[in-house]
Image (cartoon, rainbow, N blue to C red; front, side, top):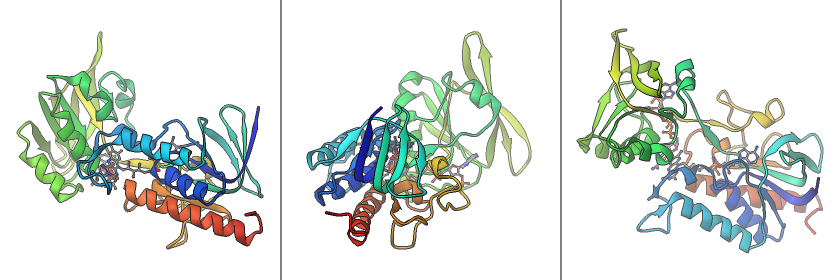
Length: 316
Ligand code: FAD
Ligand code: NAP
């Protein structure tokens, strides 16, 4: 088992962690970045990214993240493939343990562990996960060529994925629990203009219906929240796109979180309640949750870590 020591330990390799790494490396802090289960983060699950500045024609999510990683490594980041399973933030240097058994010591820590897709939490959803139930249209749409699929949710992800699914599926039914969407207006316009997409409003999934041999989704039992009526509809696949939960379980009871589990940072800063521990990106942002804001707070965290080290006499 190896011990890796650094002035700046960055946990997470999404837009926040990689931007923090670029800034920390350019400040000559020789950061170590632990990539986690999803190197590149959430954007590796999507296709076209059209709102990240600098790419007039848009860029594919995975490609953008590969470029960020290459940039971070070129300026001096040590990029390690491991998952942090324990974090002791009680004293400096802070000490984390990886799934590999390796120890990671940081005089400062930047937490950029992002967020993970949320599930409905009903038993039948779990039963059919991987057998017609998915949380990643970009990953699984291909399997539903010429089929009828449903997507659950009313945010940007649900709308974007519904549109993407029409490239493969015969029809897409978006099911939302209210009578208006949360997604940006321009995306709603694209959704409503797409002849392959229909919407069922005010409804939630009570049960995923399926066959056992072969194990496959065959339909959904829906409940209309306004009328209380249930109806069964046929479908070949269900994509769940109901948002994300911040990845903060490692820091429970140690770092301050809000009611939804997001890390609390001081307004206008990435500082947490523990001096020397900073949080950047979706893990501390319940409002914007964009690649560019994640990158922005990653930059802030690296600058704040640098200042902390100077103030504590350890940036030599
Ligand atoms: P994440 O991207 O979530 O990365 C978190 C990182 O932390 C991952 O690398 C993970 O492996 C790591 N990690 C987690 N736990 C651990 C651990 N224990 N140890 C080590 N590492 C760990 N935003 C846009 O601006 N434009 C878009 O077009 C856009 N499209 C999107 C499409 C989809 C389908 C989704 C889901 C999101 C989209 N977003 C988009 C939002 C954007 O992806 C996020 O805002 C952004 O990825 C947040 O970056 P992050 O670095 O904070 O976290
Ligand atoms: P989100 O904005 O939190 O939306 C989640 C949706 O799921 C909401 O419509 C919510 O309904 C619904 N929902 C939540 N829990 C549910 C449940 N248990 N049952 C049924 N429905 C439920 O999440 P998101 O769409 O994943 O977006 C996350 C962030 O990434 C956002 O900031 C978004 O802007 C960003 N993003 C951006 C882009 C882009 O810019 N192109 C693309 C994708 C995502 P209510 O509306 O009733 O709350």
